[in-house]
Amino acid sequence: MIKVLARSIREFKKASILTPLLVTVEVILECAIPFVIANLVNQMQAGCSMDVIVRYGIILIAMSFTSLVFGGAAGATCAAASTGFARNLRRDMFYNIQSYSFENIDKFSVSSLVTRMTTDIMNVQMAYMMIIRVAIRCPLMLVFSFVMGFIMGGRLAIIFLFTIPILTIALFLVIRAATPLFRRVFRKYDALNDSVQENVQAMRVVKSYVREDYEKKKFVTAAEDVQRDFTRAERIMAINNPIMQFCVYAGMVFVISYGSYAVITSRGLDLNVGQMSSMLTYSFQILMSLMMVSMVFVMITMASESAERIVEVLSEKSTLTSPENALTEVKDGSIDFDNVSFKYSKKADRMALADINLHIKSGEVIGILGGTGSSKSSLIQLIPRLYDVTEGCVKVGGEDVRRYDLEALRNQVAVVLQKNVLFSGTIKDNLRWGNPDATDEEMEEACRLAQADEFIQQFPDKYDTWIEQGGSNVSGGQKQRLCIARALLKKPKILILDDSTSAVDTRTDALIRKGFREFIPETTKIIIAQRVASVQDADRIILMKGGRIDAIGSHDELMKSSEIYREIYTSQNRVGGDNNE
Image 1 (cartoon, rainbow, N blue to C red):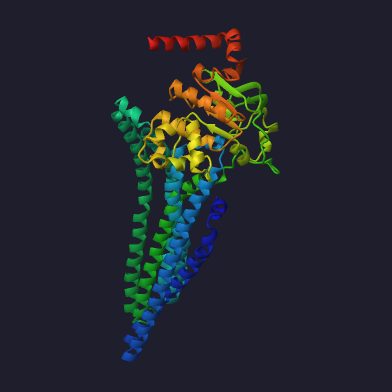
Image 2: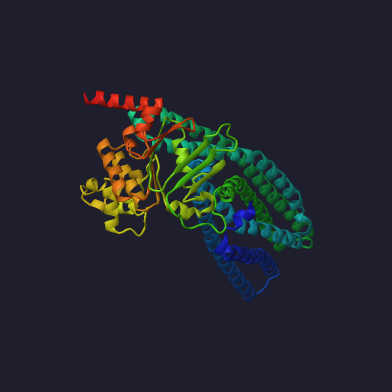
């Protein structure tokens, strides 16, 4: 885990190394100051002149100022190192997530990934900051003060040998009890964020069904569940503080009482006033260092679970990668499914697709029909290699898709998925997702083909109209047409529309298909639809049922040979006729 996280330090390695070095100098000076003060007190007790006092004063001021400078510099380098480390972690996580296949993404929920990139990284950042500064400072302070305490106080310093084991045992017991609770809390954080995300995304549904109170209760229940576990963990961690305080004050009482007794009874021979004052300072430094060490361990305990969750994301490797010497040119838009079977998970009991044999010529228009759960979308997702086949092979341009460079393949296969997504930005910004270098004329042509230009021209800002996040300020049909135009700008050899015209009227749907035939005849077009009218004029229509091809042929052929197709066609036309009446 540490090895994986350490890769994200990179350019902040210098600051990470410099911080402990600066802290070391700071600690040495802080530990030397009580020693100088003790000598000054002894000199004053012996009746020294004012010159001696001034000289010691200058020395103390110089030491204090130098310690302050090194401490401030350590704080600056520590801040740079910890925040830079956190920035690199976020970047590395985001970049790795971008490389994930759909199979990888299925392992993590969106809310869990957001929690890992925010709360978990913040915990790790705080722990790293404490490790390179406080975790270095406190042990050094502990060791130096311990050594100086024995030098100055002799037997009086034996009190530290009793307090340190007590604090260590207490800290161990606290951490062992709290760690499982923190692990459980972070899982519940994911569930809480899931609830928020689901509610916000489905806000229209929540309001239309007047379920606000239900959603509020669900959120409160999840929030209270997190609170309960966090409260239990914090209560356990809070035990650490009073134990530390007890040891600090017990040590102070012992040093003051026994030290005073030794000074008085020995008349300063065994222990003088200067030594007594330095012992008080060193005992305070030792016990405060122990308290700070306990705080570091508390933070590390909380951050360790966060670190494991981050490493899970960083260590996850995409199940889909480009092979060595990958092909970068797609010859044409022909598609072949040879004995293809597919399931989403190795643990799945049944295949989502089974025994698929299908051969599509370049430039053909293929329609796909089927009921819900017939695996229509699963079939087309194998073409741009969003998933890999479980058995058999899929070929594009006569070559197995697994031989292509992923980017080269996907640049030639444009997919407009069921869930159309637009991003915040202008219409032009969204269209240029298809081609970053597209000219205004190319964008307008793509929009005319997708029947989007007409409504765009009605906006005051036309192609510079701002699209809200998720396309919330355009209708479902407008969103679909913009997504189709975006796909067309890729100038692909294969265009796949996964139920992407369901929100447009039949006339617009027909115009889109007519434009495809006339202006991109060489592009292979695959249209998944619920309406027979959307695929009726396709070269061939594939009827899917239960993850298999039930029938294939033209509209006329299927009307003769497929009872299921006839039922779908008849029922849809009857419904349409009733509506017209």
